[in-house]
Image (cartoon, one colour):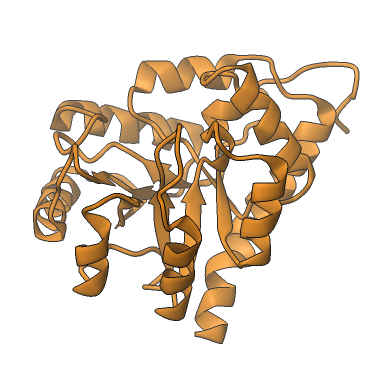
Length: 249
């Protein structure tokens, strides 16, 4: 039983033990994440020690990082060849809804999650795309579930925006470092609200630098209510989200 009068860290509650990381940037040398193979392997080694079972590698595809799916698959294959551990790795991408997205979407040149059922997307932190809701609807009409990465970090989004997105069937992915305060008090407060309201469907480390992630996991920022809600989210993401999409697809 978790006390409501104490604060806990992610390490203390063993959150990563048996976890799936649905969002990280440990594919080396392709974006602003891990820069080389040795650091990728170090991150995977840390995951092993913490008890992570599966990892979704989700490198950026955006104007600043115009990665092709072919290039990302080649890099993923090299990492898989170099890694000898037990963690199951999957390749997807984090797709910025910018000027590069429309053509890739038109060509169906996408790296999806959940056996082709989910598409991880993001926007600018400061301003929404001009046709945000239309784009999300088009993704849904393609037969994909849009998964919005770290919705708590978008400064322009209000609680009403979150409600509208959920009503549209958009799934939310928590960045656990937001909850740990890495991105400021505002993002942490939004993350806690969305978590306690049960609006998240997935979580992810959004790991770019292992040292930053490890520090975040050791911060005593979680209340007893947070811990209970995180455990519910962890179970939900493991047993419901992708399985549900496969059943209805």
